[in-house]
Structures are given as structure tokens and as C-alpha cells.
Image 1 (spheres, helix red, strand yellow):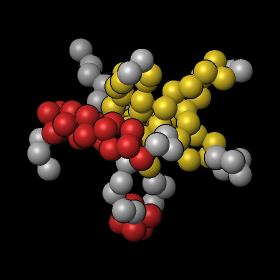
Image 2 (cartoon, rainbow, N blue to C red):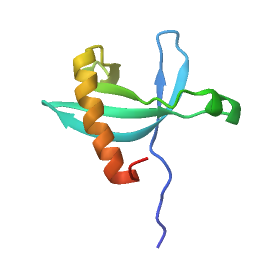
Image 3 (tube, one colour):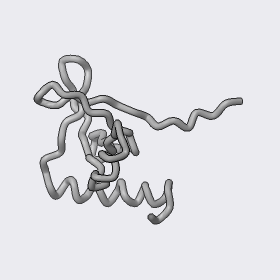
Image 4 (spheres, one colour):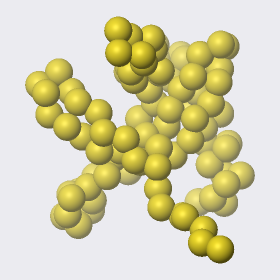
Length: 96
């Protein structure tokens, strides 16, 4: 029996048509909407070391192609969601 412990990865394309890879850390449903916590995946160690260590919170929204992820612009909502995500991270990964 083989267990697959590889990360869930997603590729997003920005407004300049540049692809960025992210690991999906977690997803939650909040007030009837689905949100993703994403952490950038880096091609080399130098980029990883230089990174701030922050994750991104994105909202799944309907689109012509089915759905897409969109930035959350509401700072109050970001604060609420980050508390939920960080509590879940602490449960999953420990306090650090």
C-alpha cells in the first residue's frame, strides 16, 4: 500500500500572463464561499530563502471556464480568514 504525501499544487496565471506555482495549504468554507490558503513554490533555494514566508488567501469564484481563484481585497475579511487558517495550521502542523 502506497501513501502519497506529495503537496497539492496549483498553477495560477497573473494579469501579465506569467505562471506562478503554489502549494494548497488548506481550504475552508466561510459564509457560503470557498477560500484557499496558498504558499508559493520556488524553483530554486535562493528564491525560497529570500521569501517573506507569507501565504496568500484566495477566493474561489465562478467564471466562464467554471471557476477561478481571485484575490480577497477586504482587509477585515482577510483578518477573519487568517485567524481561521492559522488555527487550522496549528492543529495540523503544531504551534510553530
